[in-house]
Amino acid sequence: MSFTRMLTGAATMATATLAAGSALALSCLPPSIETSFERWQDAPERYYVVSGTLTPAAPLPRVPSLAETNGIGVDTSNLRGVYRVQGEVVYANQTVPIDHYVWVRVTCAGPWCGSFPAAGTSGVMAFEQLPDMTLELTAGACPGDIFSDPGGATAARVQQCLRGEDCSPPVPFR
Image (cartoon, rainbow, N blue to C red):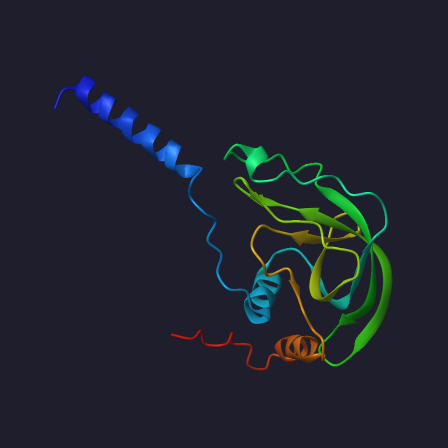
């Protein structure tokens, strides 16, 4: 095969891949508090798990829609907002009240972006402690950052995980 034919074939394949890329959908694994806990625990950063409610404390920047991204990545450097979190920090054998201002950062996976939590969003979530000692919640394109907890079972499950008890995720249905 000549070099020119090989180069033409490679260019055709690259063009087809790029054209199909914007038509592809984001595929996310089903979230579970156990898999998210494992991610938080294994991270080199320090995380605090909170059972609480989020309220925006200032106007939030607009997150671009999928149509606006033209199928390419998004600059997320300005997708950060201030929220007030009220609730409890979850530890292995106790909880401690929290009423604090925190950052919420929206991240994107290519052209697909998360969204800022609506006012009054509540559940179990984890805040990363940043080098300046502020706390930040990441709202990614895939779910798994905030877990509903109407009866407290999710927070209790986190406490089990923190105590080193079985923290295996549920077996998915087949």
